[in-house]
Image (cartoon, rainbow, N blue to C red; front, side, top):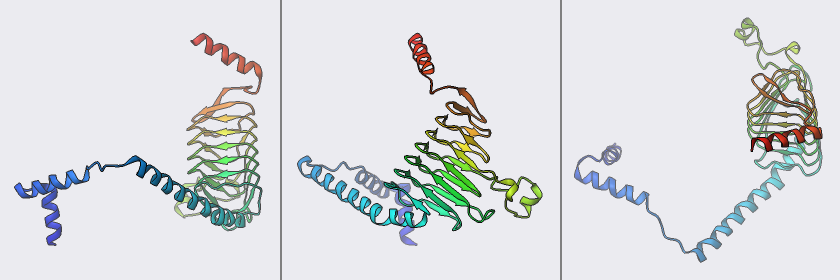
Length: 250
């Protein structure tokens, strides 16, 4: 079309006329418009208030009621800062405690078992972009934090057998084992928790770790696969030792 050819010539800056038009358009795109602070600052706060108010109203009147209706049991003060999580699988049973925060996450359930279960304890939070793949059960304790972009799965998701994968077969009960994340656990961003794992109370999983074996309580695990780097973090002697080491380093 003629208009497409004209735009292409302007973009290339062909000839004197098109080159001047290109420079003119470029200068218009980089204009720094003036502002009057006594006028524009109140307008900013008006826009911010309207946006925040609309978001809160949608959250309170739409996202929360719909999520509660989807769950089997929900406690008080559930928060969904980014709207409804994406839930796949109508057979999934969800139990949520009090004061739970769930950012925009994906929760998927398979049909290996009739009623796979997700439990989230009181005062726990699941970060943005995290994926929970559930075939049997994933249990998250009280006061636990799962960072953004994590993967928690109680199954292999695909068969290990090459022949079964070629046939497009799904996982069986032999490929499934429950995951339990204890109380007061902190899982850093981009971690992967594989099937059959139990993470002990108060433990920390460092960012980008892959947990392939059980995690003992009161420990810090890191790496691929994750290994213990610190133990007994609940004891006063651990804290004193760390403070002494920091003093020596200084």
